[in-house]
Length: 456
Image: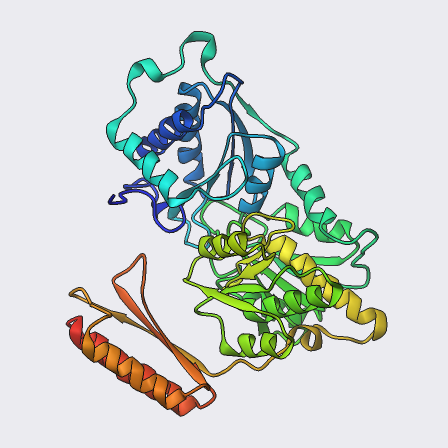
């Protein structure tokens, strides 16, 4: 069926415009409240949010819908997405909701739903919810009198999550002696992340921790890492950690202000877990991860599987194979021993564990040495915006891709995909030869542009 509300990661859009209106938020509450009511027990939904101004509009609309269906509602306030997923499961809730547009600007917002197992809902469930929203729920299905849902705020939600995050470390692990810059993007982790790092013994320099409703992700966080990198150098810190608005992704800066992306972090965690006997299977990454990561893992006998872009597809592959490490170049890192979705803080703690471990044998070990494990292959991405629909199976496009792949041989690759949110075709190539990479992208982009009625 056509999907009018749910996209690749819940519902997302400009706040107070369809599909992110209070009316639709209430419909989500009604539909999900009905769908997830099973059995005769008091049903419970937990709701968290980031720091966007529009959260004050979306939260009560959702709450009204759930209460109308007889679901008890527990409000967390600002809390990271992975915390909501974790608490949904640990509190035996029937449903978890996160109000966030992740790394988008403040004027957007979104609704992410988690099942009782703490995982994001599969496509078939989202389609059933859409059908309920379109049809509307008859009045007789709504709760009446004493059966209406109760609503309360859970004051210790942040504390519960912080203790969970600290418990992901080995017993006795401390961060004493580390000077850490933590950039919370004025988002959902602005309280929990600096506190966890400080309680573990680090000297903490927090930035992006003064949310005002409109400054989330604004010139800070994992999508604007310059501030973090500059602060690390200026403060002579050992490491910088940048989260996004809902703290489900993380990027790192070394002591020189050099950015360390998700591919390097996945290599570090997968490699260190393999050495410790903790890695189950191999690593799941997406088609956008650098070929250098794949070669690094090959040299160490670690298997790698690629999926399409999107952390939900990474998680699906991890669950199917029983593997416990996966992620994306953008910094979505999923460690399924501890979380059901990307968790920027938990992933950062694993990186810090590797740094502390390296300093046990070499007190002068630096983050630049610990976290830079391979030289990325030259990679180039070009976005081609189109006016008319582009058929990626067109003979001219297929032939151009084949020619580029033949030129690369085993020393490069081409990725061609349509954006799920914009009229764009993304043309990416990487390989050992920079000139071949540039030629491949330029040649393919020109053919895609011609079919799409634009100039590359």
